[in-house]
Image (tube, rainbow, N blue to C red; front, side, top):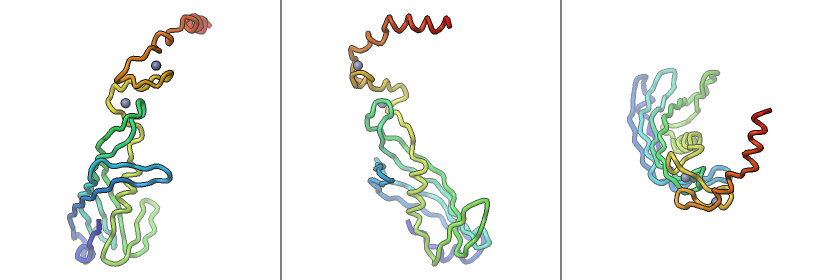
Length: 168
Ligand SMILES: [Zn+2]
Ligand SMILES: [Zn+2]
């Protein structure tokens, strides 16, 4: 995911379009493996916005795989992330935004793209909107099985207790 910037750097207003597609199977963050189910496609443009700042903006599209948080079935979801990064080849202090220092005529975007993906990784995914989850008693996947624990859930002693609490 290398951007060649020799021409863009030359003058303000110069723009370069880019598109990268890369198969990334897995990235490791701390102790977690993050799995992909499709290629990572990055599209965007880099623009020289003056003051020796290059603005790289675009979108990341991919398909990721994680476990449904209710039933723990492996589930694939699409991930769409917009990003905007600013780079300069001279150190620029700014309270409002981060301006990343680079040198030479190239920027390797890959670590920044991976970082955006990690930051936007879906927190809780569902295999389907009405996933019924797993039975907390027997562990059966309630999307595919009916278990016999249901009767116990309506415990008559509990309903008496509930009524007592209501009257409090
Ligand atoms: Zn599920
Ligand atoms: Zn059960």
